[in-house]
Amino acid sequence: MNLHGKDIKIFTANSNKQVAMDIAKDLGLPVGESEVVTFSDGEISVSIKESVRGSDVFVVQSTSQPVNNNLMELLIMIDAFKRASAGRITAVIPYFGYARQDRKAKARDPISAKLVADLIATAGADRVLTMDLHAAQIQGFFDIPVDHLLGVPILAPHFIEKFGEDKDDVVVVSPDLGSVTRARNFASRLDVPLAIVDKRRQRANVCEVMNIIGNVEGKRVILVDDMIDTAGTLCNAAKAIIEVGGAKEVTACATHGVLSGPAIERIQNSVLKEVVLLDTIALPEEKKIDKITQLKVGPVFAEAIERIYEDKPVSPLFV
Image 1 (cartoon, rainbow, N blue to C red):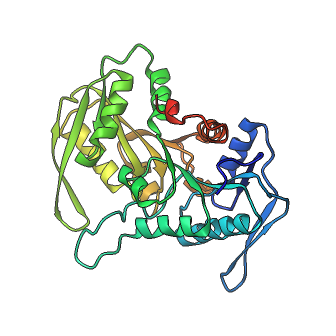
Image 2: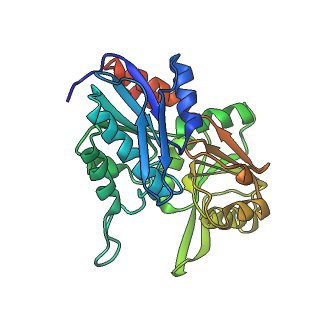
Image 3: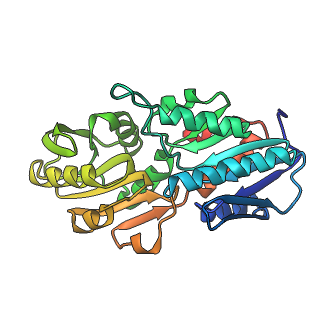
């Protein structure tokens, strides 16, 4: 493995071309010429249409829906770069799928996040650059270096600008106990209080909100999470914050907008005033509604890539 490539080249598969274009634009580079197509039988074919010999290659691909297709595109592209003698290959994965399968929750469960980590390393990636893994310890599943960016430094300034000095009645709320650390970090950046929604699951797929720890009465609430999938937990928490806690309004923010199943309908019909997401996952036209705002991650990834290429620390991006 080379420690350094001779030049930076940005390539992308099909899942999130806009982020790749944003990264390339910020670095003053073109997106590399490549083609990723799917044959009629479902097999994926990759063609790299320019030399990458000795280059520092960054391949951008979120493993979002369709997860398995996008994962295979990434693996095959990495293999193509390795066989084309790239100097170093970095898998830039804004959203890492399978991250929720990070432990054995019951007997005979797989640990799929570890399997995917092994596949990426085996395909030929020399390092991984990602953002807001569902569980930070997934970094340890990889046998190659992982640079783990955070979404909070992008989301927090949006709300600081939105509320300005008028934040006396603003409270950050964690929708469950698992997101408390992220919400606390967010609250400290805004210099506002923190509250927690205590939910208890009586049976599978039924989430009952029992209590709100902290004062949200008459407050403007920001719900903070790492991802929004079906939006059930989020919308139930928002409803409880209004009905039980007596909050004035509720806004939500998350790094990853998975938005599967009934998510869009739930958000549209919920008490949520606005949902702020990062564009780690491309949002199709049918999911673009007035309540959803997307912020760009391209500039942060571009700076991280520049730092990796120049062998500088990535940690200043967390401040």
